[in-house]
Image 1 (cartoon, rainbow, N blue to C red):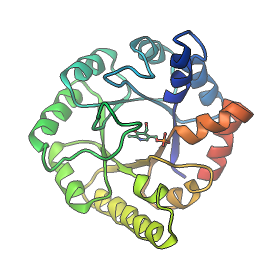
Image 2 (cartoon, helix red, strand yellow):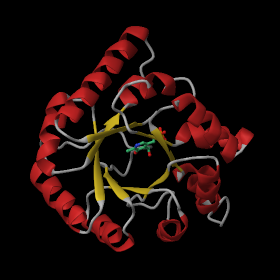
Image 3 (tube, rainbow, N blue to C red):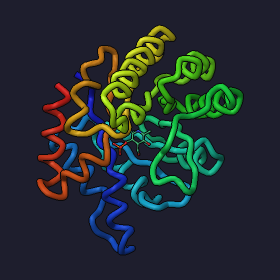
Image 4 (spheres, rainbow, N blue to C red):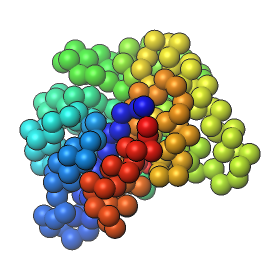
Length: 237
Ligand code: PXP
């Protein structure tokens, strides 16, 4: 059974809609952990559209499981990560105009930069994961960066509307997991996972962790964070 890390960005999205103090993502993290979540994920974006620096600093003190900080590999974010020292850092590409992270890192085109960034983070004892498309060339090139883990982008699969395309995308993820393991790296997966599609992804042997945000927070609106997390944990089994 893969471990479940809950991304709480969208609790902050609701708070930022009014610029006030509630709902507090720190409280959501606490409830998610109480329900059995294995870790908490936050993405500190350059434009601070949801998670704020204050959230990250408090979560560093209060998260009792594992804090996974998603950042773009920029100087500003590196300085924050090295200071706050989350349990792990996931490097993601970031575009200002995107609604959410749209694709994986282009490791092939940015190998040198990523080697340096991963080296700096690992030098301070941080565990590093790279968010990457299920593309064999990209995955093979990721080993050079010395990252510990690859998070396979499941968006192609979760967004496929037609059965044939979905099957194709699923096979790509299976191949990506296999290749990542052959490179000696650990495997996580995430993006677009929900209460319907999570079963098939969690059945892929070798995936250690799932990072899920939107569907859990959306369900929390109706049933509360604890129940939403428990139900997802059940489906990951
Ligand atoms: N993994 C990464 C790297 C992400 O950027 C996101 C979105 O913040 C997720 C997982 C979670 O995706 P979703 O919110 O669709 O579950």
